[in-house]
Length: 249
Image (tube, rainbow, N blue to C red; front, top):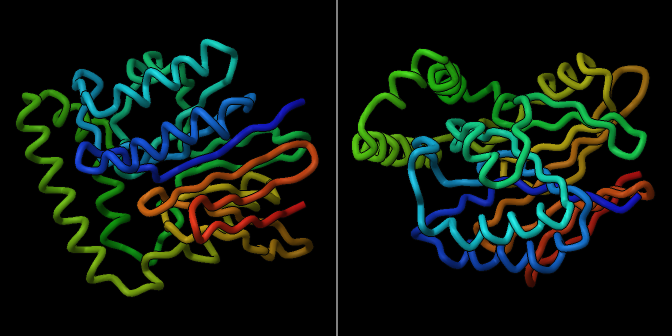
């Protein structure tokens, strides 16, 4: 049956060639034998439309295309930074674009996949921003602008986001426990996999009559990491000198 891998928060950026090199190495090593790779958002530091060619992505795209050509299934789910990725870019990668909240059959276990920022309900400023930029009229108006203007606005949004993040308390940066339990009960799952918070861990979630697991993916700013899933187990793997390996049933 093989195995599949999950990543998020790679934040590929022209200013961070080290991240690009680290992710390409992961694709050529750990991902080479995977039957499927799921990218759960913030794959890109920012994205202003499928009509923009970002040369720093070429090595990653070429490597992903080689893997999908050999039969690896590739899935992409939007994050809060690359929410404008469209079907065109996904076709170029050989990826299938997933809904923001997607339930999959993970070796006989129902798993809910999402980016994770929708669970950070205590951060009201981000939730308001999220509602604005996910609106179809806002996206249509943004994409209708010249490419240079879109880049200018994206840089402004990034700077504002970085400033806002520095001002937040730690609790605001993490998910809301009630929101987690609510969405897991709504979809009838006992396994949730997401990124966004940059706090890799496997948490036990109380779901009333039973418990579930919430698996949080690592970011790639320092070392990177991924989740490995097979019929036997699910493991959280953080790369680098501070590597950790955790397992849930």
